[in-house]
Image (cartoon, rainbow, N blue to C red; front, side, top):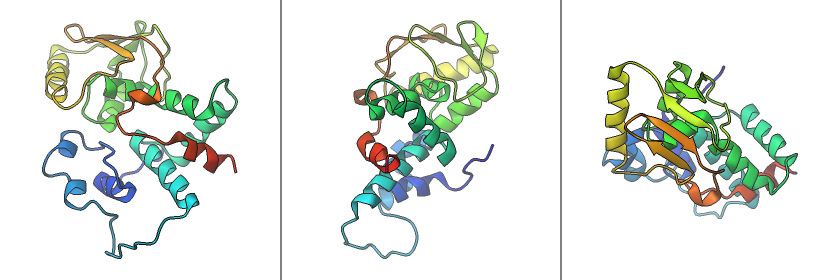
Length: 209
């Protein structure tokens, strides 16, 4: 599958927000966005007010890049959400947050979503005692999530949790048993549970044209 392989810090600068794509680096003094909080490229920082379409597009691009998705994948989530019961924007957020790679990230198993995706792809994640190596797998309420692997891997993940917990906490909709590296999905995620604020209405308006 195609994926973005360029410099991730440029994406944060382009979207004008920290997307936490590089783990610990995003919270340190070496963060390029902290040094240059403007779009990359020629320094023609226009003061012109962006159009409403530009705001919609930037919001969509920000969310896509934050979760590491391509356009086709992201549009599919919109189509699913538009056919589901409830507010389309709310359903989109729930679909994105319920991805297994994001769940691993929100459980502090990894410092970034790309690192969490590797954890899933390498077959260390189990859902209800069944190995799942698909990053886009959608967890459900009451699902049991577990990390299985050699002691070296488990000790490394526990150290990750200790280090990352100083910067962010486990999502409120998840329960983590750190000692056994087991977790449970308590409820569906909501907008208030996000790390980076999302204006989902702009995305819905963009796709519904």
